[in-house]
Image (cartoon, rainbow, N blue to C red):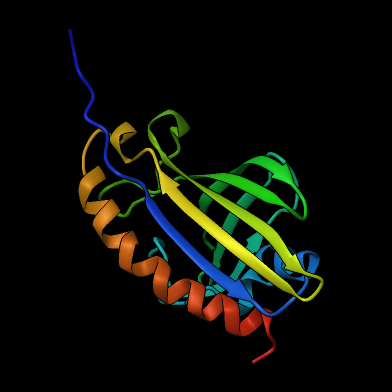
Length: 158
């Protein structure tokens, strides 16, 4: 009998001074404005980040040399409240096309007022990765802090 040991998920919460719909829109359609260009898994510098806004849509990175990497696939699509996407990056920070062994990220957009939204992010299922799951968890634990700070600035127009 094989026993899988769970790796604790990474959970982050931020508050955005923006409506729920705007917070969701900036996360999806504005990803190229806030995702750090140095955070990528391609072999060339980043030209553009794109999230295809639909269930099954891919989060793609276009590189200056014309190549493309896929970072994620939208598994759950519930605008403007929630998305869940596969994190198609291996423990070696390379593309991982086998979604069955990928971690995943859930992002919830909870309206606190008409102009204020709480964003809850949970990056989980690191134990599905054949190797490097704990190292990936440790890396994204700090990485999401930096990334969400940049997201807040874009969503708030700063």
